[in-house]
Image (cartoon, rainbow, N blue to C red; front, side, top):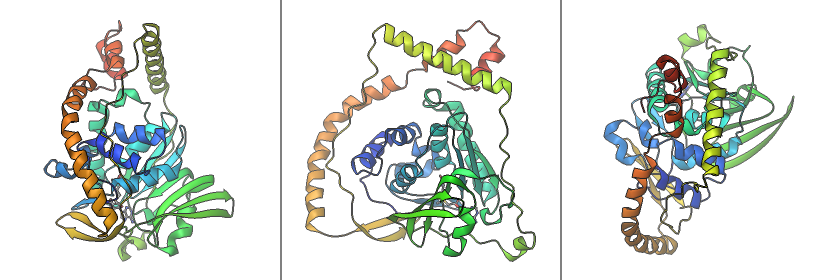
Length: 363
Ligand SMILES: C[S@@+](CC[C@H](N)C(=O)[O-])C[C@H]1O[C@@H](n2cnc3c(N)ncnc32)[C@H](O)[C@@H]1O
C-alpha cells in the first residue's frame, strides 16, 4: 500500500507532503513523525527509498507505507500517560513514534512474531536513544518488545488505552482483539481490507468506523504445534518506575524548563521552522499495486487530473532547486549539539551520574 503522496527528499519533506495531503492533521503527530527519521528503520542498502510513500519488505522486516502510519497515528488519538499495545510491532518504528507522545508515565508494549525482527527493533531503539538529535527534545516512553504470536497472548493480561494491530485481522478475531481494550479505549486495525477504528464505549458496547481502504498481509496464524501449548505469550509487566529513574525524568524536565526560560529572557526568537517548498498536493487515487523486487509499487489512475498534477510538479521541481541551498544551510544549523546535554555535562557531578542523566548518549 502507499504511493498516496509524492516522495520526499528527506524525512521532513515526506512529512510536509503527508501534511499537505491531510494524512497528518495534528501537531502532536507531526512532531513525532519529524522526530524519527524513517530511513533509520531501513537497511543501509535500501535507504534511498525511505522517503517514498511505499511499504517496504525485506525478509521478515516489513514497514507499512507512511500514509498508513499517518492515519493510524491520528486515529489512535494518543495522549501523554496512556497505555499502548502494538500487535505485530515489527521494526519498532511506529512504537517509537508513539512513545514520544506517551511520555515517561505511559506504557508502551509490542508483540512481534519473529525473534530476528524483535532483535532488529531493539537495535533501532538503542540507536535512537543513544544518537538521535530528537531524543532530548521529548520525554520518552521506551517501548518494550516481546517475541510471540499475538493470537496466543495469555488471557490474564492487563488492558490498554490504545491498541494497534499491524497485520490483517480476520473477522473471526475481532472479539479477541477487542478484549485487549479498556473501556474508553481505541483499537485500530486492518480488517476486511479497511483500516478500522473501534472505540470501546462501555463494558459490552463498541463504536466502529472504517477509516481507509487498505491491503495488509494477514496476521500469521499459530501453527498446530504452537496451539498445543496455546495461551503461551506473556505481555511485559506494567512495572512501577524506580526512584532513580523518576529523579532523572524530573531533573531533565527542570533543566529543560530552565533553558527555555533563559532563552525567553534573553529574547532569542525560537528557531524558525525550515523553509519548505510548497507543492500543490492532492491525495492520489491509487488503483492497483504490483510487487517489484521488495517494493510494492502503486499504479495510479491515468486521468487529466493526474496530467495537470504532473505539469504542476515540473514547475515545482524548478523551485526546489532554488531552495536546496537554503535547506542545506538549515541542516547544518539543526545539527548543533543539544542544549540539554551541554547543561547536564556542565553540572558539578561525577561523570557516571552525568552519563546516567544523558541516557549514556554519544552526542
Ligand atoms: C506491516 S508489519 C508492522 C510493522 C510495524 N508497524 C513497524 O513499525 O515496523 C506487520 C508485522 O506483524 C508481524 N506479525 C504477523 N503476524 C503476527 C502474529 N500472529 N503475531 C505477532 N506478529 C505478527 C509481522 O512479522 C510483521 O513484523
